[in-house]
Image 1 (spheres, helix red, strand yellow):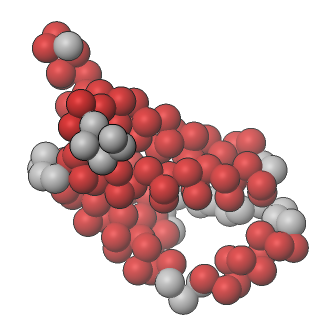
Image 2 (cartoon, rainbow, N blue to C red):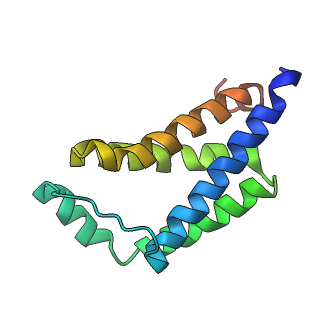
Length: 126
């Protein structure tokens, strides 16, 4: 496992950079994106939580910074797991496969990083 540490470091920094870029894009709209044609229930959900989205994006920026500077990574991976699954499930329900790619990217890297530190989580799941 010692040989693969640079791989996990790269994935951690990539995930942190992606979270920061994604969240900053929601504030500054540098990269155009949309959620496409959403089902009515998905649009109703977004309308209900729209006031909390800026807080979520600020949270993503903080998580990304912590990942890049290598602080609290074991905690951050577990903290990010339900968020990445919710992001992936929302994208799947929405039905647009191209919009699902960022969610799939975040969830996959998060799962890989959690599995890389599974010995740290043994106490949580005994």
